[in-house]
Length: 237
Image (cartoon, rainbow, N blue to C red; front, top):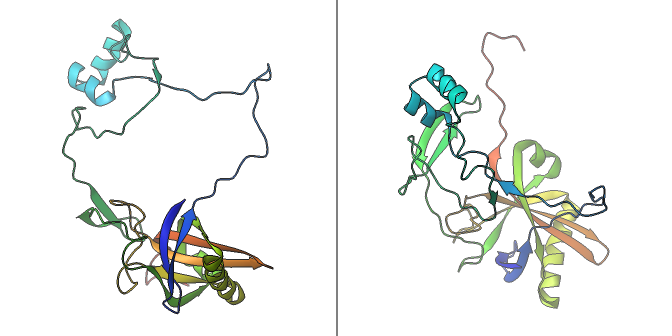
Protein backbone atom coordinates (compact mmCIF):
# COMPACT_ATOMS: atom_id res chain seq x y z
CA UNK A 1 0.00 0.00 0.00
CA UNK A 2 1.41 3.37 -1.03
CA UNK A 3 1.65 6.34 1.33
CA UNK A 4 0.08 9.77 0.99
CA UNK A 5 0.61 12.82 3.19
CA UNK A 6 -2.92 14.19 3.59
CA UNK A 7 -4.14 17.30 5.40
CA UNK A 8 -7.72 18.08 6.41
CA UNK A 9 -9.51 21.42 6.23
CA UNK A 10 -8.02 22.32 9.64
CA UNK A 11 -4.48 21.96 8.21
CA UNK A 12 -3.81 18.88 10.34
CA UNK A 13 -1.94 16.28 8.34
CA UNK A 14 -1.08 12.60 8.68
CA UNK A 15 0.63 9.97 6.56
CA UNK A 16 -1.95 7.40 5.53
CA UNK A 17 -2.22 4.79 2.81
CA UNK A 18 -4.02 4.68 -0.52
CA UNK A 19 -4.65 1.89 -2.99
CA UNK A 20 -6.75 1.12 -6.03
CA UNK A 21 -9.34 -1.59 -5.49
CA UNK A 22 -9.97 -4.27 -8.09
CA UNK A 23 -13.29 -6.05 -8.23
CA UNK A 24 -13.24 -9.81 -8.38
CA UNK A 25 -15.55 -11.40 -10.87
CA UNK A 26 -18.42 -13.38 -9.45
CA UNK A 27 -18.31 -15.75 -12.44
CA UNK A 28 -15.45 -17.79 -13.87
CA UNK A 29 -14.71 -19.03 -17.37
CA UNK A 30 -13.80 -22.70 -17.80
CA UNK A 31 -12.80 -24.91 -20.69
CA UNK A 32 -14.91 -27.91 -21.81
CA UNK A 33 -12.63 -30.20 -19.80
CA UNK A 34 -13.12 -28.10 -16.66
CA UNK A 35 -9.70 -26.43 -16.79
CA UNK A 36 -9.03 -22.71 -16.51
CA UNK A 37 -8.29 -20.74 -19.69
CA UNK A 38 -4.95 -19.00 -20.05
CA UNK A 39 -4.41 -15.78 -21.95
CA UNK A 40 -1.36 -15.70 -24.20
CA UNK A 41 0.20 -13.12 -26.50
CA UNK A 42 1.77 -13.93 -29.83
CA UNK A 43 3.48 -11.95 -32.54
CA UNK A 44 1.14 -11.42 -35.46
CA UNK A 45 3.44 -9.58 -37.85
CA UNK A 46 6.61 -7.54 -37.98
CA UNK A 47 5.69 -5.53 -41.10
CA UNK A 48 3.38 -2.57 -41.57
CA UNK A 49 1.89 -0.91 -44.63
CA UNK A 50 4.33 2.02 -44.64
CA UNK A 51 7.33 -0.31 -44.84
CA UNK A 52 5.72 -2.38 -47.57
CA UNK A 53 4.96 0.78 -49.57
CA UNK A 54 8.54 1.97 -49.18
CA UNK A 55 9.77 -1.36 -50.54
CA UNK A 56 7.24 -2.00 -53.34
CA UNK A 57 6.29 1.54 -54.36
CA UNK A 58 2.47 1.60 -54.26
CA UNK A 59 -0.55 -0.49 -53.28
CA UNK A 60 -0.55 -2.30 -56.61
CA UNK A 61 3.05 -3.28 -56.05
CA UNK A 62 2.28 -4.43 -52.52
CA UNK A 63 -0.65 -6.51 -53.76
CA UNK A 64 1.46 -8.14 -56.47
CA UNK A 65 4.20 -8.93 -53.92
CA UNK A 66 1.68 -10.52 -51.54
CA UNK A 67 0.33 -12.69 -54.38
CA UNK A 68 3.83 -13.74 -55.41
CA UNK A 69 5.04 -14.36 -51.88
CA UNK A 70 4.57 -13.34 -48.25
CA UNK A 71 6.54 -10.13 -47.70
CA UNK A 72 4.31 -9.16 -44.76
CA UNK A 73 5.11 -12.38 -42.85
CA UNK A 74 8.41 -13.11 -41.16
CA UNK A 75 8.46 -16.92 -41.04
CA UNK A 76 11.02 -16.90 -38.24
CA UNK A 77 9.08 -14.58 -35.93
CA UNK A 78 5.38 -14.57 -36.83
CA UNK A 79 3.31 -16.66 -34.43
CA UNK A 80 5.92 -16.75 -31.66
CA UNK A 81 4.65 -16.50 -28.09
CA UNK A 82 5.43 -13.23 -26.32
CA UNK A 83 6.19 -13.34 -22.62
CA UNK A 84 7.68 -9.94 -21.81
CA UNK A 85 7.18 -6.73 -23.71
CA UNK A 86 8.56 -3.22 -23.61
CA UNK A 87 7.05 -0.10 -25.05
CA UNK A 88 9.14 1.44 -27.83
CA UNK A 89 8.65 4.49 -30.01
CA UNK A 90 9.31 4.15 -33.74
CA UNK A 91 10.25 6.68 -36.38
CA UNK A 92 8.22 7.11 -39.55
CA UNK A 93 10.54 4.64 -41.27
CA UNK A 94 9.83 2.02 -38.60
CA UNK A 95 13.18 2.22 -36.83
CA UNK A 96 13.51 2.49 -33.05
CA UNK A 97 13.53 6.11 -31.87
CA UNK A 98 16.09 6.60 -29.09
CA UNK A 99 15.28 10.23 -28.40
CA UNK A 100 11.62 11.14 -28.05
CA UNK A 101 10.06 14.49 -27.19
CA UNK A 102 6.58 13.98 -25.75
CA UNK A 103 4.09 16.65 -26.76
CA UNK A 104 0.74 17.35 -25.12
CA UNK A 105 -2.03 18.37 -27.52
CA UNK A 106 -4.72 20.64 -26.08
CA UNK A 107 -8.12 20.56 -27.78
CA UNK A 108 -11.02 22.96 -27.81
CA UNK A 109 -14.49 21.74 -26.73
CA UNK A 110 -15.40 21.22 -30.41
CA UNK A 111 -12.41 18.87 -30.87
CA UNK A 112 -10.17 21.24 -32.83
CA UNK A 113 -6.54 21.59 -31.81
CA UNK A 114 -5.86 24.57 -29.53
CA UNK A 115 -2.15 24.32 -28.78
CA UNK A 116 0.80 21.97 -28.39
CA UNK A 117 3.33 22.02 -25.59
CA UNK A 118 6.12 19.84 -24.29
CA UNK A 119 5.13 17.40 -21.59
CA UNK A 120 6.84 18.40 -18.35
CA UNK A 121 8.14 15.56 -16.18
CA UNK A 122 6.65 16.66 -12.88
CA UNK A 123 7.80 15.17 -9.57
CA UNK A 124 5.43 13.16 -7.43
CA UNK A 125 3.86 15.22 -4.64
CA UNK A 126 1.50 12.86 -2.80
CA UNK A 127 4.04 12.03 -0.08
CA UNK A 128 6.24 15.11 -0.21
CA UNK A 129 7.19 17.80 2.30
CA UNK A 130 3.92 19.63 1.75
CA UNK A 131 0.82 17.46 2.20
CA UNK A 132 -2.08 17.10 -0.19
CA UNK A 133 -4.45 19.70 1.24
CA UNK A 134 -8.21 20.13 1.39
CA UNK A 135 -9.09 23.45 -0.19
CA UNK A 136 -12.40 23.88 1.61
CA UNK A 137 -14.12 24.17 -1.77
CA UNK A 138 -17.05 21.77 -1.99
CA UNK A 139 -18.83 20.47 -5.08
CA UNK A 140 -22.23 18.79 -4.70
CA UNK A 141 -22.01 15.25 -6.10
CA UNK A 142 -24.78 15.89 -8.63
CA UNK A 143 -22.82 18.87 -9.97
CA UNK A 144 -19.39 17.21 -9.94
CA UNK A 145 -20.40 14.18 -12.04
CA UNK A 146 -21.75 16.52 -14.71
CA UNK A 147 -18.70 18.77 -14.74
CA UNK A 148 -15.71 16.42 -14.52
CA UNK A 149 -14.66 13.10 -16.04
CA UNK A 150 -13.15 11.02 -13.23
CA UNK A 151 -10.61 8.62 -14.71
CA UNK A 152 -9.06 7.15 -11.54
CA UNK A 153 -10.06 6.55 -7.97
CA UNK A 154 -8.18 5.35 -4.89
CA UNK A 155 -9.35 4.40 -1.43
CA UNK A 156 -7.66 6.27 1.42
CA UNK A 157 -6.90 3.90 4.32
CA UNK A 158 -5.88 4.41 7.91
CA UNK A 159 -2.68 2.88 9.25
CA UNK A 160 -3.39 3.21 12.98
CA UNK A 161 -6.13 4.03 15.45
CA UNK A 162 -5.24 7.72 15.35
CA UNK A 163 -5.37 7.92 11.58
CA UNK A 164 -8.69 6.06 11.69
CA UNK A 165 -10.21 8.92 13.70
CA UNK A 166 -8.54 11.42 11.37
CA UNK A 167 -9.99 9.88 8.20
CA UNK A 168 -13.36 9.01 9.73
CA UNK A 169 -13.97 12.66 10.65
CA UNK A 170 -13.15 13.73 7.08
CA UNK A 171 -15.46 11.09 5.61
CA UNK A 172 -18.25 11.99 8.05
CA UNK A 173 -18.11 15.68 7.11
CA UNK A 174 -18.26 14.95 3.38
CA UNK A 175 -20.98 12.34 3.85
CA UNK A 176 -23.21 14.76 5.73
CA UNK A 177 -22.70 17.49 3.11
CA UNK A 178 -23.16 15.05 0.22
CA UNK A 179 -20.32 16.80 -1.58
CA UNK A 180 -16.82 16.30 -2.92
CA UNK A 181 -13.90 18.29 -1.54
CA UNK A 182 -11.32 19.69 -3.95
CA UNK A 183 -7.76 18.80 -2.89
CA UNK A 184 -4.39 19.85 -4.28
CA UNK A 185 -0.67 19.51 -3.73
CA UNK A 186 2.16 21.94 -3.23
CA UNK A 187 2.84 24.56 -0.59
CA UNK A 188 -0.47 26.37 -1.14
CA UNK A 189 -2.49 23.26 -1.97
CA UNK A 190 -3.47 24.55 -5.41
CA UNK A 191 -1.20 22.41 -7.60
CA UNK A 192 -2.27 19.29 -9.51
CA UNK A 193 -1.71 15.90 -7.90
CA UNK A 194 1.09 13.80 -9.43
CA UNK A 195 1.11 10.17 -8.28
CA UNK A 196 4.45 9.15 -9.82
CA UNK A 197 7.46 11.09 -11.07
CA UNK A 198 6.90 11.90 -14.72
CA UNK A 199 3.24 10.93 -14.40
CA UNK A 200 0.23 12.86 -15.55
CA UNK A 201 -1.04 15.67 -13.29
CA UNK A 202 -4.61 15.36 -12.02
CA UNK A 203 -7.09 17.42 -10.09
CA UNK A 204 -8.23 15.58 -6.98
CA UNK A 205 -11.56 15.35 -5.17
CA UNK A 206 -12.33 13.56 -1.92
CA UNK A 207 -15.59 11.68 -1.38
CA UNK A 208 -16.63 10.41 2.03
CA UNK A 209 -19.15 7.77 3.09
CA UNK A 210 -19.92 6.35 6.53
CA UNK A 211 -21.98 3.45 7.85
CA UNK A 212 -21.96 3.39 11.61
CA UNK A 213 -18.34 3.01 12.68
CA UNK A 214 -17.25 2.14 9.14
CA UNK A 215 -16.09 4.73 6.65
CA UNK A 216 -14.95 4.98 3.05
CA UNK A 217 -12.80 7.87 1.85
CA UNK A 218 -12.20 7.92 -1.90
CA UNK A 219 -9.77 10.09 -3.85
CA UNK A 220 -11.19 10.79 -7.32
CA UNK A 221 -8.79 12.06 -9.99
CA UNK A 222 -9.65 13.90 -13.19
CA UNK A 223 -7.79 15.59 -16.02
CA UNK A 224 -10.82 16.44 -18.12
CA UNK A 225 -13.61 18.93 -17.59
CA UNK A 226 -16.93 18.75 -19.41
CA UNK A 227 -17.90 21.96 -21.19
CA UNK A 228 -20.88 22.81 -23.32
CA UNK A 229 -20.24 23.27 -27.03
CA UNK A 230 -20.58 26.86 -28.24
CA UNK A 231 -23.77 27.51 -30.18
CA UNK A 232 -23.99 29.62 -33.31
CA UNK A 233 -25.58 33.02 -32.78
CA UNK A 234 -27.93 32.41 -35.69
CA UNK A 235 -29.43 29.22 -34.29
CA UNK A 236 -32.70 29.40 -32.49
CA UNK A 237 -32.74 28.22 -28.89
